[in-house]
Image 1 (cartoon, rainbow, N blue to C red):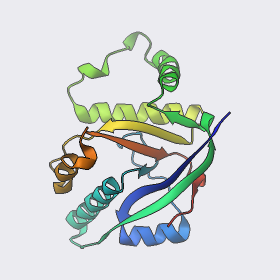
Image 2 (cartoon, one colour):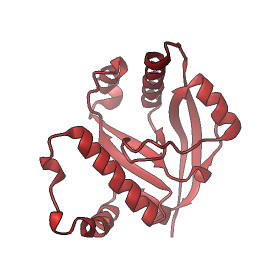
Image 3 (tube, rainbow, N blue to C red):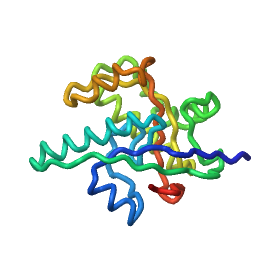
Image 4 (cartoon, helix red, strand yellow):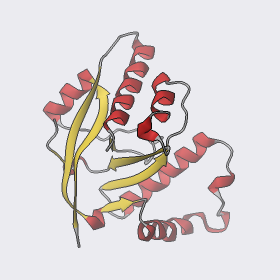
Length: 185
């Protein structure tokens, strides 16, 4: 068994939430429609965290008409056992995922690539990843995802077109167990 360490991962949020997190630590978000389902999301590209922070502040402003400043926090995940990581970039992890998820569909198996409604695909992916992670004791999910244009957020297109995203792929770290997060600053 190997131990993995990820340092200076960045998390975008608003200033008010950032101050609460510094005092009380992170809390798992209840949203299930994110890339990997419920969890605390980190990036290894700081600019992506700033984009996420700006997006969150735009959402808050639309709901409350209150202008809030963005903030980025940094944290480490130190010495996590590799068997507690679900790495969507690793062939062995994907094979195990398919082996354990496929029986859930039985004769109703289907190709997600044929689904037209992208929002339903995202929700299904999030549900399946969370289910697998929960059932198999995974505390961290790591995946490469294609940045998709999000016209609702002006910063999304700017970020997707920047040199940081020249290949259109971003690495996302979804923490399923807040106790693995260290050195929040």
